[in-house]
Image 1 (cartoon, helix red, strand yellow):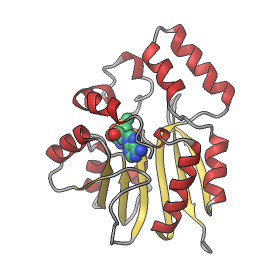
Image 2 (cartoon, rainbow, N blue to C red):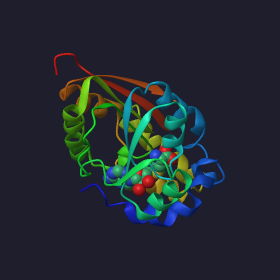
Image 3 (cartoon, rainbow, N blue to C red):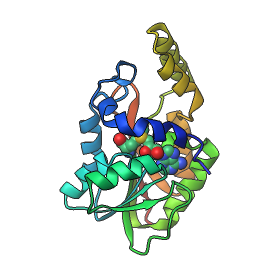
Image 4 (cartoon, rainbow, N blue to C red):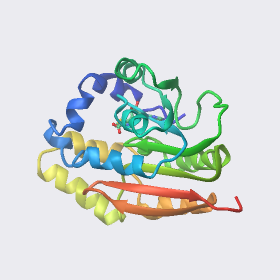
Length: 215
Ligand SMILES: C[S@@+](CC[C@H](N)C(=O)[O-])C[C@H]1O[C@@H](n2cnc3c(N)ncnc32)[C@H](O)[C@@H]1O
């Protein structure tokens, strides 16, 4: 479930770190301030961290450098191979947001960057219900991902990409499940989280969801 876009990452893995460095003009705005976005997620993380969609391991590396214990989950074989090569000491497991090997240690923070939009909104809700069960009291979810303030602003960004001739970006924005902020707010609050959002560039927002005391 939720793995419908994995083929894209099998192909993209080898060039992915060039894209995040801004070398792909279609995605340069999406990855604008990439390091700052990852640093913001790290700054809000504590204790033992469960990371979904680690990709080539850029966020995992920063989390480990900050002294946090990280368990990484990633469904793409090609991404797993690169992350393992870059970070041999990282605990890395094959899995996805919905299905992954049982983790036996208490989890304080769940993080992810540029990955949650691969789930439909129904799948997102299922994942968030599972996060609620997995997290310790006072635990939190910190995600950086493309989201939109409204359906109108999403449609405007798709038109803007088309006007610039960025057909790959325009198709991506329509093919995958980039959410509206209100939808994310509803999903997290329905499942017992206090949630806040901070915009990081024209596409990416940081979502911080703190598990409510009585949940
Ligand atoms: C755009 S990359 C982001 C990689 C990394 N987190 C970063 O910030 O650079 C998206 C990653 O999410 C992974 N992914 C795709 N579908 C997923 C799913 N259902 N569950 C978890 N990860 C998924 C992809 O394989 C890929 O590694």
